[in-house]
Image 1 (cartoon, helix red, strand yellow):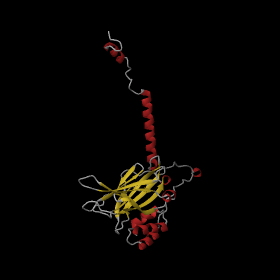
Image 2 (cartoon, helix red, strand yellow; image 1 turned 30 degrees about the horizontal axis):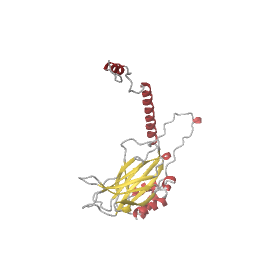
Image 3 (tube, helix red, strand yellow; image 1 turned 180 degrees about the vertical axis):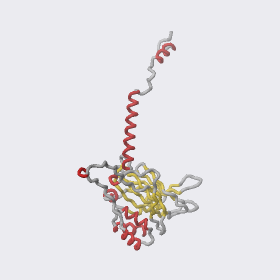
Length: 286
């Protein structure tokens, strides 16, 4: 007989064997309901993403052109190999490495980023790519997206100060071009794997190819044939204006060092506004 205050082996065995087998398990019915709810939410998000090419909490597409930088110092014994890492919300993008770019690297890389709701800043870091050690962080910046870019869909180009080991806003400058397209102007996501080559400006008077996703276009479902008197006109989506061939020819005369495709892409970003395109080209060629 067990002493007072202690449990005998037989009593412990009986207590353990009486514990229900699903003591540490969730209710099976609740588990099924939770799984179905999660699956429904996942399918809803996928359906929305496939419809307009953006996640549910995204307000539009922010296009960022990382053109070049002028750094204060070259760290290391040889010329640096800089590259840029950009974070927009939870999305991260990286440029290619400019080998031997040193203090004046050029990237000319275009990113089409999803802009989540409530995000009004982008975070930027410049690294020196190293072969046998970890890449070294050279400079960084927190850049607020201009209100005119989001609210008025204007194309904005500017030099932004960089911070680093030298001090806040003392590590040099980086040249960025920002433009924005609202979600209402974006259409169905293009097929995976389809890419087109566009050319972006280069201050060394040559153009570099960059692979980007093509501009999505809306696909209108075929309507069944109706009698002539019952047919209703189909409203076509507004197509962004583009520069005319005459405008492009004039701009090529004004900017002979800029490639034709570059002029066309900048004209599309400015929605066919010739004056705005001229201003953008002036800023990029200065």
